[in-house]
Image (cartoon, rainbow, N blue to C red; front, side, top):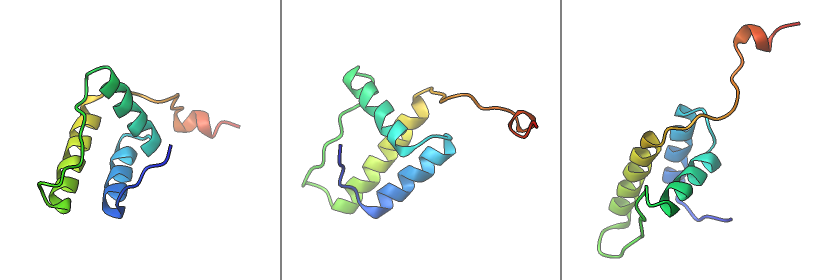
Length: 85
């Protein structure tokens, strides 16, 4: 799947992904799963607001959504386990 996204949204989304110790792909996957289950809103671009305002609203919605989805990815070993010899 290819997405077209502006640089600022991409950076902000990567920061949010990093805060959750996950990838941007995992965040998008989580959102899409929640959307098809009716647990997340469908957000469409519209022409009745400025592009910057729409981008801001979409980023805020994505951040809100990502904070509301409880998920954990993979096993996180302790530092001692990682460097065990």
